[in-house]
Image 1 (cartoon, rainbow, N blue to C red):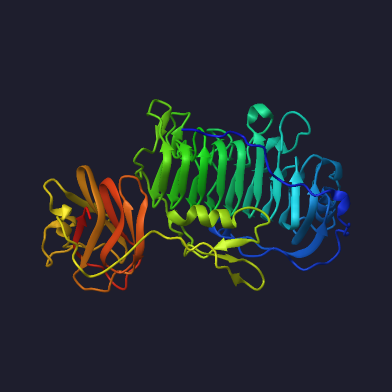
Image 2 (cartoon, rainbow, N blue to C red; image 1 turned 45 degrees about the vertical axis):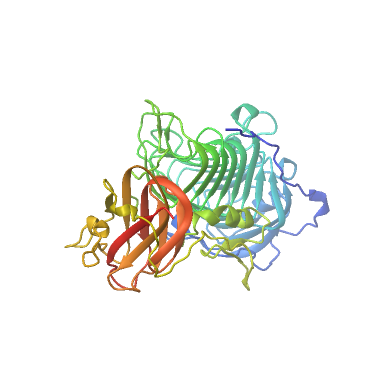
Length: 511
């Protein structure tokens, strides 16, 4: 598989001298928009505060040190380029800063939000022993741990030592190479970092996307949410999870050169409706014999290659299946995986208008007066009708089987492939999935879901059970068409219903 490695980072720097200085104590209207999602909303959530403006790193530190206390809420609006030349240490009772990084240390209740074009150039953001931190709409680029200048151990954004409730949103985190070129991770969490969300961000051109846990003994981190992020030209760690739990959904992964999501040492990843393209070993436990685990659903694997398993390589593919379950305590809405590249390209990163997904393959701009764009509306090709397809019902073929999620008492998986409309399968609740499977690859392009009582099934997905790819989505039972697919398993996933669904027959057809 052809890959391009470490294209030069494309961040744009704005000359600090071209920006009018605004005193850190000047009042301004809050620029942070939207609200946190994922695990950052748990354990007390994240909030904002009084707003000031800063155009240098020194002014950011002054704003922190001018607060009444280390926990006085503050929103720091950043404009222009923050670099080593304009970032000095500032002292005070409410801060603990350093000259070579933006230091959020021993503090709480701080928001840093870019206004216009805010670039942290070769200068990382370090969060330590802090809580209730929001970072939004900024670019952090080319932070090095070796060479010159160095900052933040080479991490674009790094968290360590008793950090909790952090939301990083609409950021662009980029490097220009890997460890040999002086860079480390783009988004690292360690030493008891908990309840973090990374959303709508770009991570690009780095050897390491990020880690949760610095070693196999640093296992007290997480949970973390990663959603609607764009990982591109990354060697590994998207992320690396040591002992931590992560919810990873609706991300676009392009050109992961060596490995991707890497749960190990008991780490768990719930991996929902992501799009992986032109990549290698995008999910599994790699470079260790300490097992990690994953729950997969609705993902698309487009030109993904997989290594053979050995003592320190346990890829989830080529046919990823779940080997654990992960409970998610918050509400969330999934975009169809087929829409993810378009949605993420339109929304992720700094200076993109803080657009976000509506959860319906469209986008909206997050602002004080929200406006809905006429942006991406792509969705899987779906058609439904009550007519019976022509041809052979492959579900009745010799050797065909059925399985699914938990079933209601008195029902059976096999009832959906017995040719009878009087027997049926029901999930144990209002949602669940039912599958038809074969011992060898079978081409399917149409299914017919026959309900005992019509109109009960609401939204659904048709999934290639062998790969996890979403083939179609919509609402209501009946005939559903999609691109011809050769597979050993087709799954009908019921995401909503007006009552307990009763599927009498799950028919499958080649055309």
